[in-house]
Image (tube, rainbow, N blue to C red; front, side):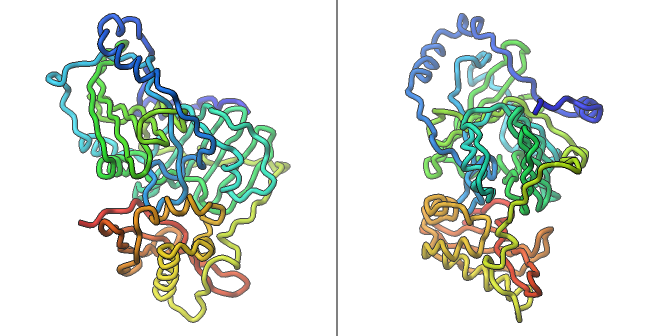
Length: 423
């Protein structure tokens, strides 16, 4: 599988897009001007890196919230190849994260390129693929295009390309994973998505939920452009981030995430180029499978009658309330057999993953109340208020209704958007 080349539509779109050029190192010049920083960075680089033996499925969520759908990925140590000149805080360009949130609010699509680390056996297991292909666990370069949903809370369409390895197309409730040899897995369900949307939603989460937040101003040594660098971490979630913003446009231009709270270790993902779009064409996310394609149908628990809850004799609101009451009670009690049955996306997740992703580690005790459902693209969206040991949290849950063999039933599909702390 070859790296995709830019077609005409992409050439045209790029001329209108706002993006970030990959920084070209000029470390020798920077080294001469900043001997004190050399000492600091060398001490950081000398730390023993930790090795992630079993990273989770990539990209389901960037920030792992108490009720995230699948754990996400992380990245690489801040190395000595960053070509910036540090500048004194007194001359720091005016910047606040709210400005970046506002600047990124108007873009509905995004392009990323960089490096990710992935355990491919875990990747295919979480997609429900039996007898998965043998792909080496390694760091790989990737390109990704993503289109936001109407509310810009998560992706509606994603295309991921790992050259000479695989390509993933995910649109709505359909996911295709195409290997380099042409074999394609056809999977029912939105198992591959970006949630939260990696612009405004992500920044809101990092701003509100990280325990540490450090800012450093600098100048790109080659272009002379001012940059804002942020390091932040969550000890509770054992995650940390490194973000780079352009001081003029306020846009996020580079992003790293670690699966630890110290900005160290083997990378899960390192995004070194970001391009923003108003919109991407629908054909960007069309797999265009040939008639003779080697397609492997993958059964999804979303449409398995052994999962979910019967909705016979119940109206929509009654069914939503009943299944969510059962679901959250099972979560609070650690009854993960029931949790997996009611929320099929979690069918292949370990107890340890569910402890972390569903809030047990945060002291979830009970479902306090539910609001009236509102209609969404997949099904009703129900506001839930949850009680934790240190307070309360609000989260919206999507309920998906099915008709299987003439019988009405429903499942907990996923959360909608990000959880919100209640004061």
